[in-house]
Length: 242
Image (cartoon, rainbow, N blue to C red):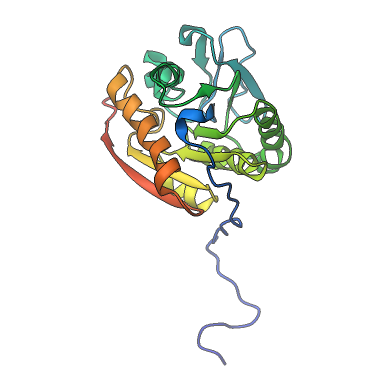
């Protein structure tokens, strides 16, 4: 009998398997890149149908020129209060527009996407939602996709969709509050600020922190992330005091 394996027996503990690598190197300087932002955190326009909070694999288009005052969150898997104070905490559209004005990045995708990543629709996100979003972003000529997720399941859904984008030739990075989940699910690149779920992109109304998280993530993609699965912890900390 082998000491390490007994035929016919298996662990009662679930051991997840990290998916195979998927990797698209960033081929342009940031100043020439078209950037898109997507989120599994339940962000959508106030005029759109809310997500179903017990599980939903649909997505909502968000024009990049929309006022962030016209956006809201529908998600039952985490505390929404920070997003209600400032949607940029999860979907930093105002900060991205400022980076374009600064010349730090080239342009923004005309249309970005929000979805509610909670729930168990792994196959739907992998086979329908992810490929659809990836195809639409590819058609817009997007070079970089940044992504956030709310709850733990959201980080899984966010990673699935970014992998689909990476497969069609777009460089992606998950800005994660729960980096181990994104890493185990096979995120191509990860940055991890010290923030609670619901504020992946930084403390609400803290423009300096939000801008720094975006800039550090983009620089990481351009200059440091040279292989699949790299994760960089970012030196920004925010604690949500309920």
